[in-house]
Amino acid sequence: MKSNLKFISSSTSAIFKSLIVIFTSIVILTSFTPKALAENCQYTVNKENGIQYDISNMSDFVKNEIRPEITNPENLFNVNVIKTCDNNIVNKVVIGMQPKDYYVFYINGKKITEEPTNIVDYNNRLGLDLDKNTFTKIVDATSQYDFSVPIPKSDTRSYKQLEELYEKQRIVKMYAFVFAETARFEDAYNSLDKIFKQQCSVDWSDFDALVHNWANTSKFVIKNNLLESSQLRNGNLIAPITTKQIQKFVNSLKEGQDTKYNNSAPFLDYDYERCGQA
Image (cartoon, rainbow, N blue to C red):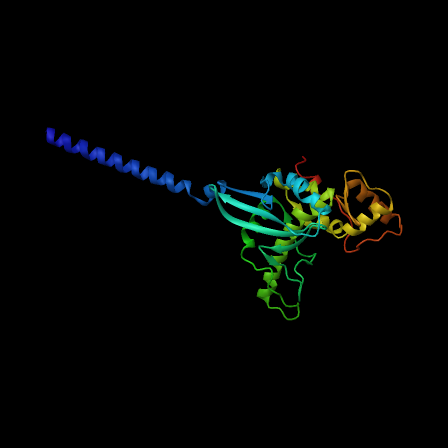
């Protein structure tokens, strides 16, 4: 009888230990699901080897690190977008920018091709949602492309090349808005906290007229003596163009004044102004 009890006790103990092992394995496997991995990853930005900013603080990064560059010499500077998971760098995108005008010239060390198709001269029909999720997806996808590879003109390119052009232009368009247009314009800058802190989605097309009139609005500000002490200047370029200055610029257009502008699109309201409102 004692022998049987001992056997039952031993069997129960073995089963119990097996259950513990199984339960532990389930916990471990669950902790490594894609969702858990995503939660352990973060995206940061920095200039050269400078201070790292979480992308939720993108507005601080643009204001402190990028915008002042307009007064610097011609030397390019690099913006690094870094994806870190469990304290390990798993992806890094290096964006080479020109200080005097914030132009994006390089991505991951490759000069963005201009011939025969200029990738930077993106098609305005190309839709783009400006939000945190789209930004991180674009960061993850950037390394798939070599931006120095020429893409044929429309009458000779294949469908595969058309898709490649589309994706490359989406990537450049995102980086240009987040790092360049927000440095140039207060209206674009004001969208950053909505995008990266409040999880809003902004339609790029709302900014179509704005981003195509930096030189024109800068000259308007200078001509009409509207320059403010807090604004930076490099020749005929001003940063940032303020909301009030844009309003005066648009009013001059509506009044029929002889104001030069890019007529590709009208100035619109911004969706981010309504984001988060009841």
